[in-house]
Image (tube, rainbow, N blue to C red):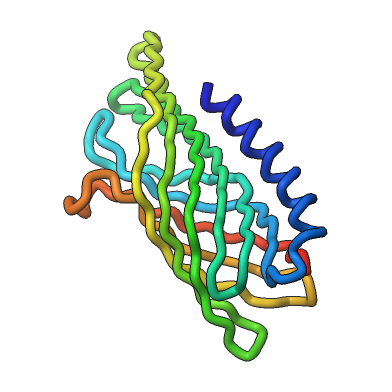
Length: 190
């Protein structure tokens, strides 16, 4: 079900981008940003540990450099093995973020920004223990997020970006947060 929503959001984003490209004469920032990132996740199965994984996706922004709307889709896949326990875990996660961002330009080359919004997450956990596999597909869950980042202009329509975003799973308990560090590039539409 989440994948259908992801496809619909991607198609709507592309259509809106095409429409707004013509209509955005007053808008100063329309961008599509492919994301390849690194994610560190704290897990509790089978014991408390951390897991590293790569993520990929895209982020679209629309607005002004000092205030804009954003939509983002991330897909993550990871495998972790515990040989002493004869256990292998695999996690697949789809994440959609909708939010706002606000930034400040420095010398026309750098843009520091903050971001705030909500994330919908659906995770599938597969566990193989002693040759027996069990699959758990969680319901879609919603969480707030906040983050900060930096964009460096390389050319008229190309920027390199990096950010750190915190997803708050059980606020104010800060031990259960998810921290997402991503890097990518932005194709800016004038």
